[in-house]
Amino acid sequence: MERRFHKELSFSGSASDKIVAAISHPFFKLRWVPDDKRDSCRELFFQTVRSFESSSDSSPDSVQTNLEVEDEFFDYGTTTSPDAANNAVDNECISYLSDTDTDLKMLAKYSHIQNVFVKYNTTLPSSAPVERLFSTAGQIEVPRRNQLSDSMFEKLLLLKANNS
Image (tube, rainbow, N blue to C red; front, side):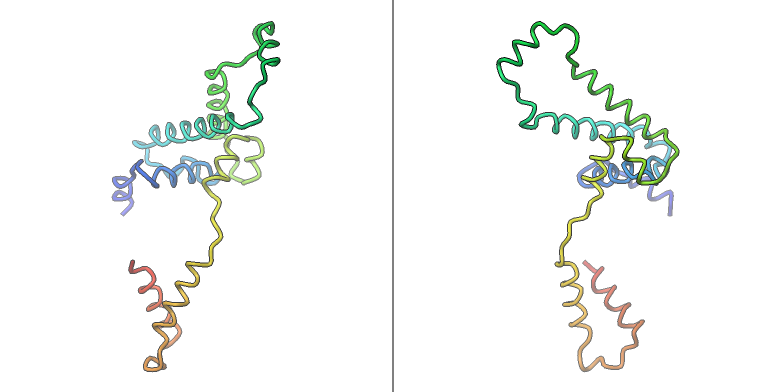
C-alpha cells in the first residue's frame, strides 16, 4: 500500500498546498516524502516560502516617498537585492529542514516558515460539516430503525457521510 502512495504523489492543485502544509509542520518536515520525490518537494517548499515572503513585501508600509528615494541615492551599499532576500529565505529554509527539533515552539526561530505554517495549517471554523453530519444522522435514525445498536448506527453514519 505504501508503494501505491508513492506513485500517487502529485504536485498539482490542492496537493501542493497539502505538501507545503506537511513540510512546514516541524514534526513531519520531509520525513514522509519518498526519496525520489524529496528534491521536488523541497523545491516546492522553497518556492512557496519565497513567494509568501515576496507577497508580504508589497504591503502598504513598504511604499517609499520621494524623499526616501533621494536619500537612498547617497546611501552606498546598504540596499538589499532581491537575490539577497531570496538567499536569506533559502538559508532559513535549509536551517529549518536540518533542525532536529520537532516541537511547534521551534517555529519561533524561523519567522518565514512560521508564517507559511500558519497560512497552510490553520483550519477554517465552520459548523456546516457538523450540521451535515447531524442531518445525515437524522436520515438514519428513523422510527423503523429503532433497534440499531450504537456501533451499527455509527458505521451506517460513517458510510453515508464518507460516500460522497
